[in-house]
Length: 77
Image 1 (cartoon, rainbow, N blue to C red):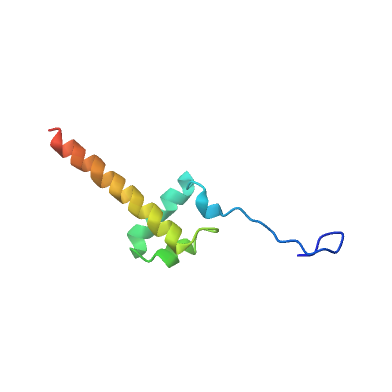
Image 2 (cartoon, one colour; image 1 turned 90 degrees about the vertical axis):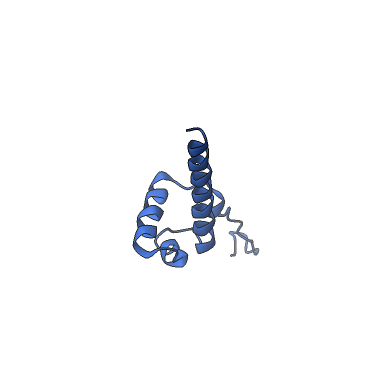
């Protein structure tokens, strides 16, 4: 990119993927997962700024957290 003075400037973009997922993104991921399963690239194609890897990591972290929570509930009965 060339700035106003004619010098080359490298754009630094903070990666959106490092931000937390919004509630809308979470809902969309859940709905898409129920429809297409683990086709992360297909799901990521519906969420601008998110890669298939971002989606898969998010899903697996939520899944693992949910499994731990369920395991703790069953132990407390």
